[in-house]
Image (cartoon, rainbow, N blue to C red; front, side, top):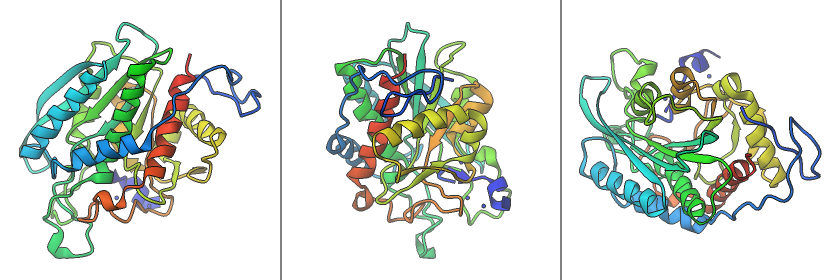
Amino acid sequence: MAISLFTLLAAFSCGGSGKTGGDAAGKKTGETALDLNVSVPAFNADSAYLYVKRQVDFGPRMPNSAGHVACGNYLAEQLEAFGARVTNQRVDLIAYDGTLLKARNIIGSYKPETKRRVALFAHWDTRPWADNDPDASNHHTPVLGANDGASGVGVLLEVARLIQARQPAVGIDIIFFDAEDGGAPQFYKGDHKEEYWCLGSQYWARNPHVRGYNARFGILLDMVGGRGSVFLKEAYSEEFAKDINKKVWNAAERLGYGTTLVDKRGGYVTDDHLFVNRYARVKTIDIVPYSDGGDFTPTWHTVDDNMEHIDRRTLQIVGQTVLEVIYREK
């Protein structure tokens, strides 16, 4: 994910319609009142934490690496074990420097016959270089990506486990994008272009796994496991899907998470959701810890992006909020 150039002028990357619910008292805050009879599963942060660790145990997971192949197989097998219909998009993508990347988008679908759908996204690849590390000697070291990649996937694997036990009213697609985090490194002397990031989502958005694919909305999770993370309403999300931001942040407020998902506009982030909005035309937001002051988490694109900095409480807050949204969707 990368910080948008627009942001740099106003604020760099992690790589790159539905109805609004009500408040806790059941009062109308949008088109419908909150249905208090809906039973939302309890998110298990310990389980999500183990899914994050399992990915990190494969080592760095950038395309064309052994860890990437092994982790991709693991993710597809987990989704299948959790009852999803799994689709693998294997595609050759071209990196910023002309390198051919053997990429794989992994999609797990629930109720694939249902037209009423919600898409949940995360990227599963990792940054090939720790180019934001304070120690320049680490800049060519691959990143483990515990937070930047594995945390969003870990949350969604726990969501998949819960969906297997009891599905929400709508169909769910869990989509793990590849080749998100291979944009030109900071030490690259050539042009730094937005389209160098998020190659897997760019491909999927133009070539979805189902012809004519559509969903009511999408939620992208990126770096959702960092200790002390605060999530503002990312600016592209506000422009493309303001009502979905409202739906999600209202859900967080009902759950008592308003100090973590803060009802305030943040900066612009070039991330997978940008291309899903532009090309697939699915209204999608990004839950990402990027402030209006231009900061990601301290471990972003550094060698410190490891399990030591993954916090179960942050996973819990994001995971329970996502469940609150999808199980209350009719």
